[in-house]
Amino acid sequence: MNDVEKALFEKNQKNQMLKSMYYNRYLLVRYVTAIFFFTRALAKMLYPLKL
Image (cartoon, rainbow, N blue to C red; front, side, top):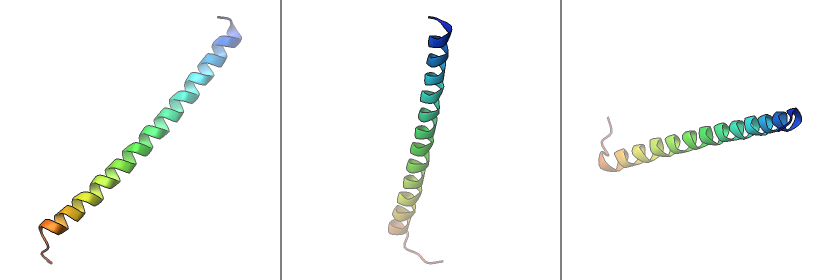
């Protein structure tokens, strides 16, 4: 593997790493938000008391 191929490989690897990081962050926010809203809805159904 020469220097040009090695640099291209490292660039592609870094690009893939960034895409993966952003996608994982998106999934984390998505599912944490869903859990928050569903637990609030469930709590309102189980405990309909107004304080």
